[in-house]
Image (tube, one colour):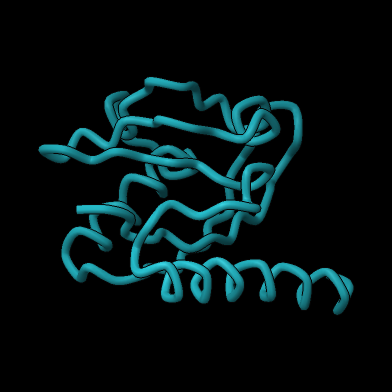
Length: 119
């Protein structure tokens, strides 16, 4: 990958973690094009908000409970579910990355950071 792309991606993850730390765990603004907001009461991991491009590329929908379908090794929903579990265990940001076979897009490298927001 071009070095400029890698720098931009790393800055976005760092900006998200810094905004989360500065806001003391409140929901973030300015990341709507790249975010998935998940509520996880009782381990259900329900999608509350989702960037349209992510929904289209990875077949994730509003209201979906992550990991409710049979597990698969290349599903973004399963990777997000695992990141939610890490946040619940540690109470702090959990960076993740995965190679995902996205519908009609080939293999896509996904990098992100799961942040604990609220209780």
